[in-house]
Length: 401
Image 1 (cartoon, rainbow, N blue to C red):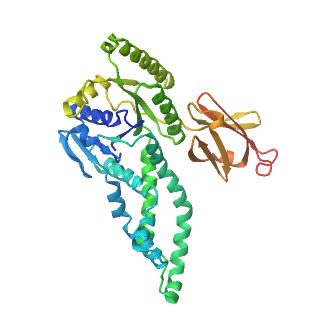
Image 2: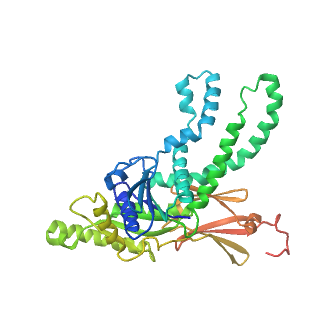
Image 3: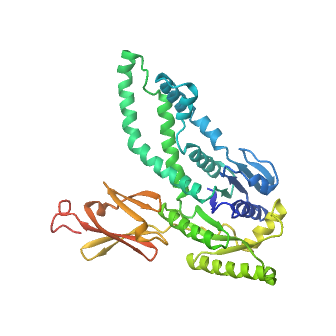
């Protein structure tokens, strides 16, 4: 299976350049690399200086690139569902255009972009797939979608499928089966459910997929990067390194203006290093011209990685852990930079619904904690700690705890 690196960060910080430069360097060193753009802005073609489309195009020996056409794949894969829903809505009196617009599943196009990445990783000849993602907010929504949609499909779909297939013979004889979905629709949603599970498994695979956070050394950008690190940890994604782009070279400090910027950037870089202890912080200098084309991108890649292997920094997300504290149990959820005021916790059956800064994730509780009640939570040292106490009704007195 290919190694996968997702490049994300605030808009305009140089994600595309970092992803393309990494791919170019890998190819120059004898690896087969594919750089993929899932960003609707599609600036990858501009960076490489070649036109790109929805299929991999060879840019140089060992290097290929593509721009995912998520809408095209969505329309092709979801055609049966949209056709059935459109007909159903038209029966309710909606005109054709309105009915068609209402058949678009929110977030579906983005999910199908991830399916394209999955296909290239599992079926392509690549040693590495480098993904040029959309700006941070869109990327976080994208990375949360497979698990969130899979959660709903998994709970609703099996029951709905059984009910529909058992009722169709009866209702078909009585009313010509006007509303129940055909097998092609049932199969399409079933395939989506399976694909979502595959995508989530790929994105969370230890040592296979990791995120590379790109930023510029500015206080506002660094603040957003810290929030991004929290959100990525919440969803279980591993960050392997940070790319600090557009760092002013030493000669920029010759004037008072340049010296001021150099000092501000040094302070921001120190803050970045403090924020990600143990992670490499790679730097690329601010160039007098924009790096466009393979020669310029190779220069950026060489500057970022030197003699290091760009794929050597595989990372694994820190898992949840349960410990004993007297008569209570403590569930530790790794979340860097989080404050207690930003955290909302809700128990839902055997799951803990954790919301941080507008990002939400449902966490399946370990079996022992399912027989406990949550009694409090705290934050600190890069984690949320939730305390649980055995429920007397589910954990009889004297039972082994």
